Length: 371
Image (cartoon, rainbow, N blue to C red; front, side, top):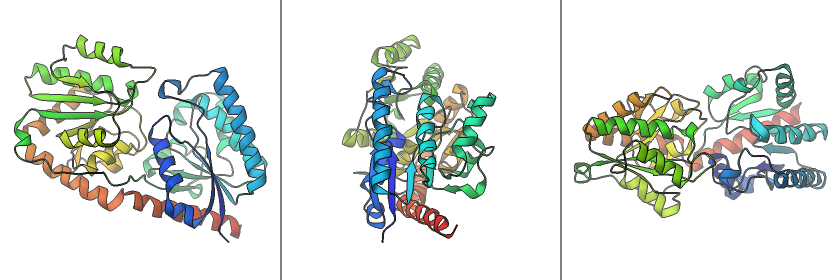
């Protein structure tokens, strides 16, 4: 008989890394053929601007979700419950109550984390007690070994498996020609518009590049959030006198997003707080050198000096320096891009993720059966 797994995960909308991976799992032929699966959408937010906010409507959606989960657990009787909780904020407390209820119902729980922040949010005795209860008697999947330090106070290594993300093949992938490198280089930033993604750092770096008379165009692509909308991001650009070089193009999906990757010379992602960003995998898939910060699992993805460059977080000057170097040395950028593409093919395809993911779930179920 197939093992029964109840998947409680984030599905789009809104679109973010955890929701995209949730959709890949939901649609995976490998996962659905290996296990008897049921899926419940964990999200109570309806859009990016709704994330992190409390509202009466979200509270009602949570109550319905909580009751739906209890009902499905009783009727489906899963061998394992998979959930993708947050590590802090209002969403964490919502998911803490769900995980606690599942354990009280006698169910084995595996928590797959697509974010971090435990160490930064354990500042008082109550928080530490809640985290201790949260991690007790669970299995854990992390995206990188570098993320274990965030939870090490509450979870032993025997509880933890590591499963890096993977993404499906792009619709089209091209290698830029020598003629393309003769025009002003296009720098691409692709992420939801959040300060923590390093958006302001990028604009400050662009201001430095402009003062140095470096020829470039910067395309900012991403969904509006409660922090930045069209008007506020345009004010940031105008205040730095960057309207000739920097363009905000809105949110792009599908072929339009692929075209942005293909038209770019390099990809920048100066995030302040990250786990395992899918956009870096997408950039590598399109043979782009990447400049990113040494946060979370980014150091697993980008190899410093080989597939791109690392910089310290919140360092516009360092970001400008690496961008300028890649613009001035296009052959180096193409070489890094090819190395990145080869690494993506070897480690970060969706097929590789599915194989790792299914093996981990089977190991957890087998461990449970032998206990």
